[in-house]
Length: 132
Image 1 (cartoon, rainbow, N blue to C red):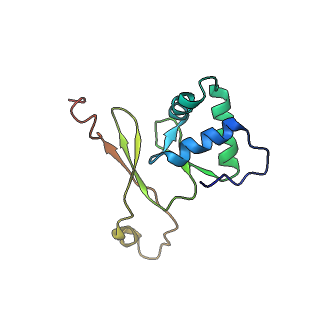
Image 2 (cartoon, one colour):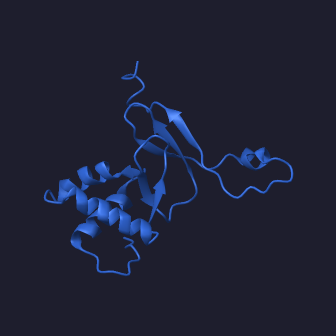
């Protein structure tokens, strides 16, 4: 199990929050982290979740996944480059596969492509029936 590279003391609660991210296969928002962490430590507070997430982002252990119009999502920073699917119904964010090779071809002549982000919006398997 990988531990976050921290410069400060790590508490049991911070380690629990780190484990929540480590086990997750998709980006999580603070409310999702709170719900998952409470399963193991019912007394954990939402302020602890926010403080720990902020610290992990500052120390570059977590990456912010920004979806326009949504709350911030977070994932472990050491993950390979990938893109996202955002469910418009349940609001969860899922990781989708590797980059399409055509991205580099979209760069206008004479321009230099530095980076990109792709977010697909629609309905996940669980919600596609519920949304109709």
